[in-house]
Amino acid sequence: MTAATAFRERTTIDDVTARLLTSSDELSYDPQTEVAWDQPIPDDHYGLNPEWSTLYGTRLWDEMSEEQRVLLTRHEVGSIMQTGIWFEMMLQQLILRDQYAKDPAATEFRFALTEIADECRHSLMFARTCDVLGIPKYLPPRLTIELARLIKTTARAEQAYGPILIAEEILDVMQRDWMRGENVVHIVRTTSKIHVVEEARHMKFARAEIMDGLEHASRFRRERSAMLFAGAAYFIVRAMVSPEVYTNVGLDKERALAEVRTNQHRKAMMRLSCVHLMDFLADAGLLTKRAMRVYQSVDMI
Image (tube, rainbow, N blue to C red):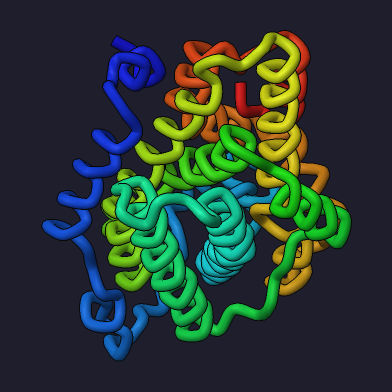
């Protein structure tokens, strides 16, 4: 049974959120105490598994010293985390707008606020990680930031939760590797574990909200939502690792970007991180031909 089919067979959105509230009560983390913030960072530990570096498998990677590789992966994970902070701030606004004036006694409302609390802790956790690793400020391109303002102001129902699911699904697969990486710095391993556990609930919530929103959707609305999801995915993927990362670790930015664009290993890893997401979108009727072309353009399928 696929994820989308399973959600069609639920009775109400409150059944899903009631279970998620129970899970939140039983298994949640406080990053302030769970992460060994004061433990020294080994000089030879990566910021993320080398296989997830955008340059892994390229000639430029082979030419780099081990110190450069370590530094690159730390800046890459810092850029990904800061993109995550930006997106989590947008996510919180989307959820608040969707839940505005809804029944506060409903488990849907209560879990939505629980998720917002989780996301606040995650953003603080990522920000502190970047501070400990000495990572400078990285932001998505200005166009992406301004387009996101439009989405967070106008998106409703499934269109609010689609971009949330996309961002969380992509990061989930990556972080499941990072949390097990013996050569990854300990604070990234621990923060990845926290994020994976708590975002699993958030993804279930997003899937449930998407299926609920699409239950009686017209073909036009489904097509519009499919393209909005694909458009959000396009900008999220392109914003994850800032081009300034390469400059800041002493690489030729233009050469690095050229090698990233043709890096078949990176493309394969990106497709791997999107397998479950594409299965869900297909089963929900949101993987249309036009949407597929967008996903293909950023190597998600």
